[in-house]
Amino acid sequence: MEELVTRREFLERIAVGTAVASIGATAAEASSARPAPPSEKVTLGLIGCGGRGMTLMSLLQSTGQAQFAAVCDPDTNRMYAAQKQAGEKARAYKDFRQLLEQKDIDAVVIATPDHWHAIPTIRACEAGKDVYVEKPLAHNIFEGLAMIQAKNRYNRIVAFGTQQRSGAHFQRAVEIVRSGQLGKITRCQTWNLWNESEGATGTGRGAGIGNPPDGPVPPGVDYDLWLGPAPKRPFNPNRFHFNYIYFWDYAGGMMTGWAVHLIDIVHWAMGVEAPETVYCTGGKFALTDNRETPDTQEALCTYPGWIGIYSVHHANKYPICGRDYGIAFHGTKGTLILDRSGFEIVPEGERMQAARSGGSDQDGAHVRNFIECVKTRKQPAATLEDGFSATLPCWLANISLRLGGRLIKWDAKAKTIVGDPEAKKMMRRTYRKPWTL
Image 1 (tube, rainbow, N blue to C red):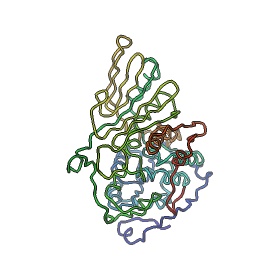
Image 2 (cartoon, rainbow, N blue to C red; image 1 turned 180 degrees about the vertical axis):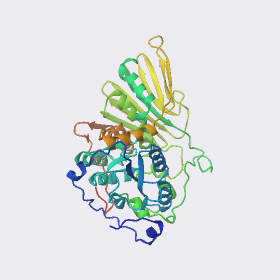
Image 3 (tube, helix red, strand yellow; image 1 turned 135 degrees about the horizontal axis):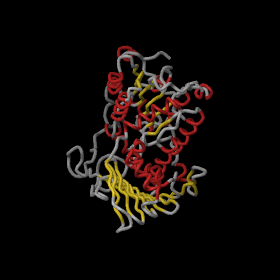
Image 4 (cartoon, helix red, strand yellow; image 1 turned 135 degrees about the vertical axis):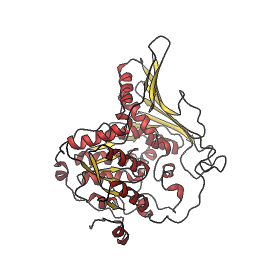
């Protein structure tokens, strides 16, 4: 397939089709990639050129150890903005499959909407390229498992975008939890709170993201490619850039959009991979916009010897532990409260001493770790398996919610929902033809 190099050439080309093509790399070819010497720059491709993608590009460029040879986005407005930042020699594509054919690319950064995490990750692994993929891991459980299978089959380095793992103060907090200083921990709590009831649109109570009508596809956007495996829908501004997170076709609301970061730290500190059961309740109680995901959601997860509570509130921002988002480890000797700005320990009487710590760099450290791992073939700070573990309670919570608050049981060994055929079907989606895993 001929490569797209310039803006003029791009506009003269016929848009690529949407049939999934085999990339053609074999497991032997993929696993034979030599470790790059520390002095060499890693050559990257960016898939998904929105706000997070551009931030990651800047962070990676700032390391001095990475360069971008290509960018990709079905919105050509974003694509060309990213190409400008990447540099004159960077090629621009609408379709990620063309980018993956570019031989000089060592690794790709995937910062697409959630429903476009799995296929590019799997195809990149097949093409012998390493991957940095943003959170949440994927749209659904089946996709997440398929991503891990591809990573292992083709022996690739795949890093997950939970950058808090690379923050020194998060690492210190995890050490404290694991040391037993807090005593017996019986409850871990995470929360994400804000109040959208007046609406970002400024149009009054319950507005939220508003109710824009369906309309024409914006110029320069390949909407069919943007939808990909998701169902065909009329174009609506709220189902597109950023706000897609509030629609089940593409994402899972803020339960998968934010809680993943927090749950990741809980699982890491507590040394667990999955809950035993998940129950979730909530609904769209206050907002009158056209989102589908809830404005109020509470998930209760059981683990051996403790429980996890995961809260998403978008109709009231009264803080928990004085913070509008965060993590709290509640032990018999004290509570550790943690977010990106730092942590504090609140003792239970005289059972331990109070302590406080400021924040630390997370994003920069995380991308530097990724580049190092591409060069050395060491495992990254946040692996794909870590990503599955962090996202799993969110997927299960949303399944429970959408089934009316049903208790979901997870078999960690078999990696499946048990005792509920209807819930088990929701572990995967039906792909819109001709897309497939």
